[in-house]
Image (cartoon, rainbow, N blue to C red; front, side, top):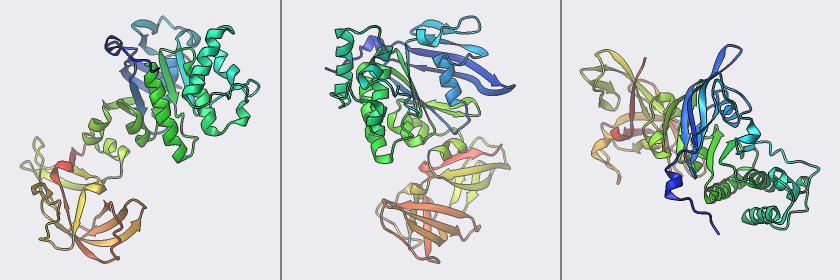
Length: 367
């Protein structure tokens, strides 16, 4: 039977991190990081390698100790400049890319490793968890007899067996093949939510973050640069780098004058910027529209599409579910990419007219 999370529990904070700072050899690797996670919530620390995600996770686990800041679990202080609760006393589960199963222990012994004593209650808990991940009857097998996906599920139930308040996960699915990865992620997410476990997941994969997280904290150079629900952070990035982290982008440069910026696609409103301010207009390839006729109106044409711009195909590639077409713009010789969700492979040199929806563009001043 699924374990339901009460509204009262969902209203409380399971993890609260405030102003974490940490240095290695005088270099800031975690810089003023603050975040919170509620029971049953999945929060994802997303960012490129070396941005401080794993160090933040290790500090929360208690493996590293921060120079500044504090960490609370269920409202209780576990770490600050004076207090440091040991990792094994925090009731925090850990899952890493390396599943770290004990090769000399069978599956039942691996899963029960963090449980106190050998009794019928613990055996029932182990059997229940194995059953929920489709591995009932595997108790006497050893890790080397299992596939990678099965080992990942064992690592998950081992971490869940002691009923941790918080689950910390560091790139746990990156070692699995693509098709298996999606299945295991969905199974993991369902099980964690059934248990009402708060989850902090570290990944560099934006697709994984969008698939799993209730909230994404985008990190860069040791700091969280933007937090929000996946929909919001994807559709309202705070800067060009944030937009580019989630997908390929096209960038059109211009100069703002009288709150307008001239582009090959006509004028863009750029209010609030000084005259002469350099700007970048960002649009994703899937939001560029193509037509054979400058005055053509496709079935999805809107008043937001603006002025069509002449472009010449420089390359087109079939990508499976879509085609990627690269264009050289006639107006300024810049290059833009467009994707279409069909087999459309125009020949090199083909002249097409591009348009782009104003409401799908992001305008950022260049500092």
